[in-house]
Image (cartoon, rainbow, N blue to C red; front, side, top):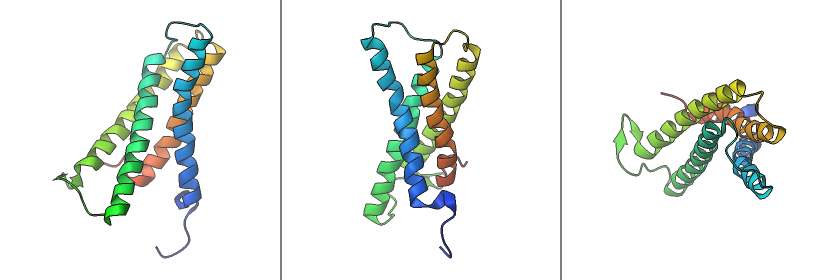
Length: 148
């Protein structure tokens, strides 16, 4: 690297972005637990795509962290087969990142369609998981997870 980091390349920003979308996506199931403890049963509108979004954001983030650690520990030695010029674990992470974007669009669309039916708690839960997607997309694009 020839100069100082750009603002989006700084380790502080990278960790903050990772913490934001991971915390927000893990907040979705936490809010579901609170909802159940309060005795509310049944899935709220837009719950299915929001669950998929929370799962894919978390799986992609943790998978990336694991893969990145393996690369650091092995000196960036490619482990396993290479398909289309990329290691298979990286292709899996790229597929998960794409699924995350699709789930984010489906969640936002479903939330918009059902906006009049959503209570305050449901709006907060959907807001949390959508906030994770908003932070996830530029982060994943920076790392090349959304590149063809």
